[in-house]
Image (cartoon, rainbow, N blue to C red):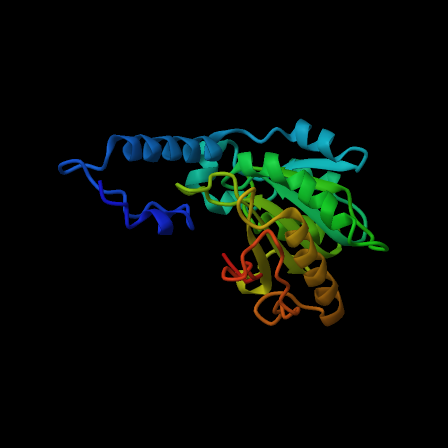
Length: 254
């Protein structure tokens, strides 16, 4: 049998390329792999966030649990607008004046949040000596803009939301971070910086924490986030990422 000309290329990516076919259908093993990936993606969306486990993983850091106005997962998926609005019952838990509030939100992959949010947050806090950090807010049925209301109620200069990213057929547990200066309702996506693709085979906790701490420091100094704040640090090549594959950059995203 001749060598597979696609084998070397497939070894460099998790994308499904050059799978071949059996008659008019893909080979059975690739079809089953696709169905398994699809099932994992659905599970990542619908698995409830274990807020108690998150709080325990962050102990002894203080935490506060809130929710959006989406009453359940089905409503959350149908009504993104409700996922951007804080449930009135959660208003009283948010008080104080802080440099930054970290929000851990289920988003579209509670599975990714459960796996990656706590270790990423700890890595980031180790890089922020002297910052006034609010109790960590754990939010359910949450969209990115929910952090604007949370940050405004805490009078926080910055809001860093760690949220589950939309799962795909190659990665179902990816985590993203959205950073907003002077969060308040009505902020646009162009006024945020995004660090994405944080997971076991993507951006590492240390690399993401380095990037987030740098962006936070620059945001506080320049008094802005979003399209006007670029990650212009000198490029650093690490052993975990081949030099031919540049590390993902922070960018504004929806």
